[in-house]
Length: 319
Image (cartoon, rainbow, N blue to C red; front, side, top):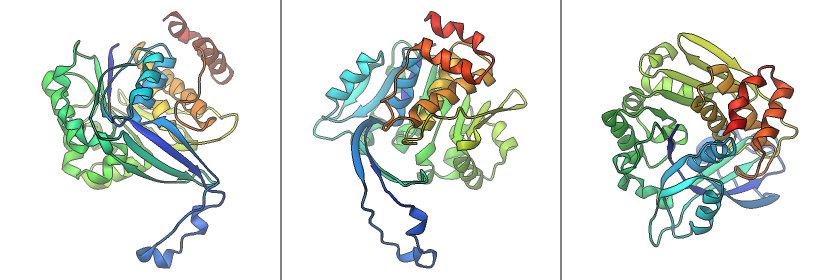
């Protein structure tokens, strides 16, 4: 399956705070909040939703393509992605602009406070799905410039290309009618439980109403796993316990990558979700979103430790 990923490409600046955010916030002073956190450490990592998902897909044997606008500082990142087997032909460099930047501080409870500078991502609307050759089998519309997200969804509907709608961080920028419009006709909607609640509030749609617009809804629920709503049924996916928790950044992206790797092989929804769950555990165990690695044999071996249907993964070993 030829999967084209659109969305943010960024450098992640990841920091750790040795306390708890909740202990520093005075509820009665929220209207005049002014906080500064002294962090223990900071690392600069490769990130962005689109390449994060692509990285997990590549680890599991897929050959995803990336379409995004990037900055003048992207050359080393491109070389890294190319080396992983990710096609960066449609990663367009915007001269004299930096690649987007994500700044995240994580406390002792894994709560995060983050901000995002779009940089070159702000030019994403200059790209068009129709220019991509060959025509992809599935397009991932993940957080990006809001105009670009709208355009890509419209193009997919016009070109009759199935797409996965993953508005995520951009939900705060989108109005209810915009969200409902781009859910309509989508093959997948991927959200976490908070984002699902936000979509419901903005669109005035409950789960049943959303399923009238999109075929498959996947809701990730952190430590409570994930739920897949498809074919008139609900399938619950448990988490794979990580060996240790280092950094939660990119966990949802890895889940999506693993799920899509399973989907590309035609696996059932439960198995797709389990592959996503294990993929997410690997990210939790590392600092950064693309610093984990495994062979497909190692992945299947660890899968077997937690699930009893590992025999179905033979296709992963035959790529």
